[in-house]
Length: 373
Ligand SMILES: *Cc1c(COP(=O)(O)O)cnc(C)c1O
Image (cartoon, rainbow, N blue to C red; front, side, top):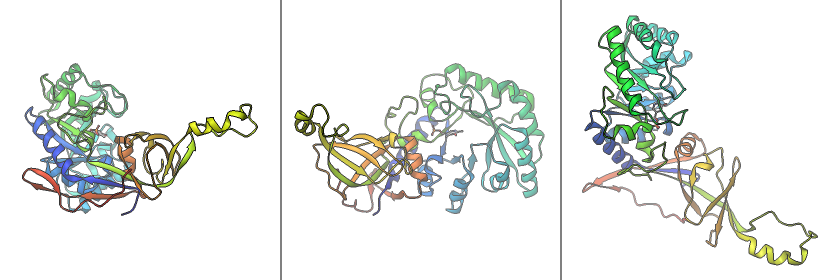
């Protein structure tokens, strides 16, 4: 086994997906599995589908192409507006795309006609996140354009929260999205089958006690993969938070001064020996860096403290713990660290296929013996 590597427990991802599908399903809300944080990793995507998710979404066409090449045949949506040079691929590989610009919508229409297919469009509405989205007052206009474009079918509207902005959607936001769905249908007919209320940042609302209105879908990435609510950073009840683990090798382990070495001849020379001894701590260097992950988004084993990172090194204090060169350190990742590790070419991705045994997920292969810190 090489390091750095991400180990993925597919059984936990399936269970997280199943739990969210069941809880939201009871409220009439479907779950679209968002695969961008794992670069459309086919095994992870299939684990989501095994949990009862019926359709997937990704922000990059390269990830969708990877999933299609691996035989994933379910509906896949492009959740970032298609690029002008990627229109044909979107029509070929995606059933649906999320859009905000009329020019792009017209291009999608002509590409769909050329290919003799019908492509579904969902219009993204700006509701305060200030990333992508049509202003609410322009929504009917956009919808009329889609409906009037041969080759396209309007399939719904969607909003985004907690992506660029850090605000949770309110009950009023959701009520407004429902009203917008009604307004669009008033303007151009019953074309708003899907009203997608947002991503994991909207789970607190969706699992709360309020009324759904017309919201009948969420697009979930982080909640399924990490079991974390992105706004609070807290674990979501009933979900696994350890489906992913990152491993890196210790390439240096020695006692080093806590603070910068004092130069001989410094004023307190007489006390130097004593201060330095008290000031030393176990310090290790890991062969992984900012090029491989978001070092600030890692959680280390207890007793190990992050000191800093460069492009290729992470430095940690290990206190009294005995750490040997050549051993591996196991870390957990937040969303940003996961996303970068999954897209880093030098980080190996290793999946464990869970087998269901008496309702519990058991690994088919024996766990490799690791010398963990
Ligand atoms: C990334 C993304 C999501 C999923 O967000 P999570 O916080 O991971 O659930 C949903 N919708 C859009 C448009 C996205 O870009």
